[in-house]
Amino acid sequence: TTENTVTLNKADSHVVLAGLGYKLAPNVDLTTVLGFNNSRFMETEYTQPILHAKLKLKPFKLQHLELGYQREVQNFNADLIEREIVMNHYGLNYNLGTNINLGWYTQLMHTQQTDNNSRNLLFTSLYYTVLQKPALKFGLNYQYITFGEQVPTIYFSPEKYQAGEVFGDIRGKISKHTNYMGSLATGIQKVESDAQSTIFRAEAAVQQQFGKRLSGGVYGKYSNIASATAAGFEFTEIGLKLKWSLTKKPLFYTKLKQAHQAN
Image 1: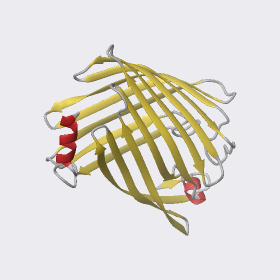
Image 2: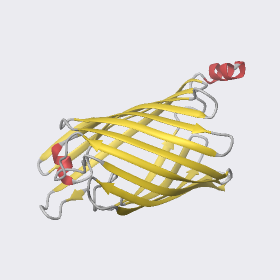
Image 3: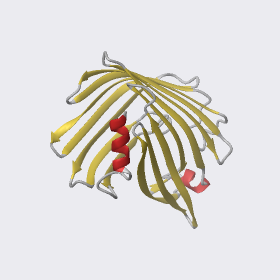
């Protein structure tokens, strides 16, 4: 539920998702998430399908490549829910590891929207792994975003946005069946010709493995980064996740195991 305290407009948005992972080959994975977004604004109600498909590849040692498509609905606030803006994201993620604990991650994304606007995004990160257990790394991030049309009265859509930050990330185990993660980042951002401003974000999560096929966890997020919210806004999210594996082993497990042993 979201409300505009100025116009007193209220809106409700409910999202239902179901995911499926499929291993096509030892170094090729396909993940899909299907669902729908049901939104209600005043007396208007609509339902839009949601889709997220991702092809994960390992072309060479220490390299990971992801090709993805995502369809989602703008539901950040009541005014956006009213407009029923659907976003179609086309993305590429590439991660290069090294034997000296340095890594380089890059994301490219192009977005087409049903309001005839478009967005291009570049995100790149250079990081260093300090520890393996727990996994501890520090690094530098850079983000660059452009929009085809500027509609600041509707949503954050600058002609040019840049942000740079330093970050730390830790992931490990509390016990045999309990994992945790935490990350902090701070830096500066610049929206078009505006003055630079300070940014900060944080995230934490705990996940519990209840059985061979059931896991769940809780998480929390905070951010004042304009690209994730809008200039001058803060964002806080607390949630619960549950995961149930349909089968004890991947489909075609024996075939994949034989192929892996052959390689």
